[in-house]
Length: 339
Image (cartoon, rainbow, N blue to C red; front, side, top):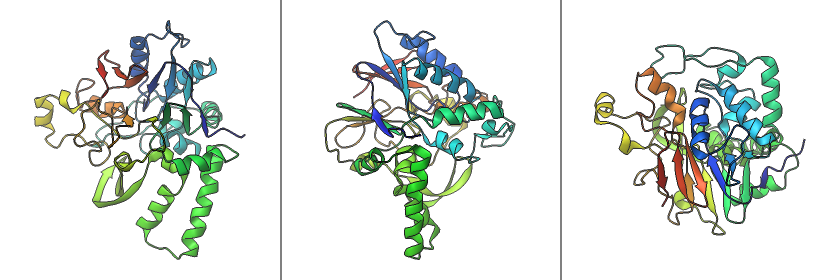
């Protein structure tokens, strides 16, 4: 089935939500604070946009999917794919996604205990795949672009002209990359991995650009030699549109208590190095201030629970960007102005 992989974004006022990671309770609290009812109706005619990574690590990925799909089918929401949805579509077992295969999993870094997750059965897996295959990689309108991880006009143009769904596009571009690797006799694994990541427009949009790390590090349940790049620092937009992303584990570090820092002196890095040095949590990114990341690490709530800490203790929150107001609304009802 053909899908417009770079689709048309809703006109009018919207609330954008990123990286829910199975935290269904945080999502329903956030929607309540934003003023939505159970059918996605809003008194001001607002609508919702979800930036992918609905699933994994948290306790109730099925509940999140059912709610988001309900809102999409009602015409009250749009949703794009993140890297975690693509992992499920490609049947890849990854850290935090064994719920999809009906398998209990130990996901905490200290491996101390099995984490509670609602498990999927085969019927639900089929429903999920069918829904995910209808979703685009990005949405755009005259003033705004939304994408899970990274926006690149060359990648977008490749996907605009592709006739098929996200998995078809992934495989199509991967075959081209593999052919070039063989033709050029490339054997260095880091070089192969970087090409597979940075030259496939599906991977660029869903998980961003990567480069060789100074030293190996642990993230996402395994050791890694490539690290995420701060692409927004060199982003040269062809127009003046705001780009809204998730994916990069931002946190409200100024709200982490001294007691937590004392107990965990190195902090808690969900995915390698801090991607936002020098930025406050509500800051726009890049030299032109045209990128905004709204992933505030609710995907590590399972670690907070495992450590016996109250929700938000590690600087986490599920957050929506309200436009055109340019305000951040959190699941704990706090509101911040972006700037």
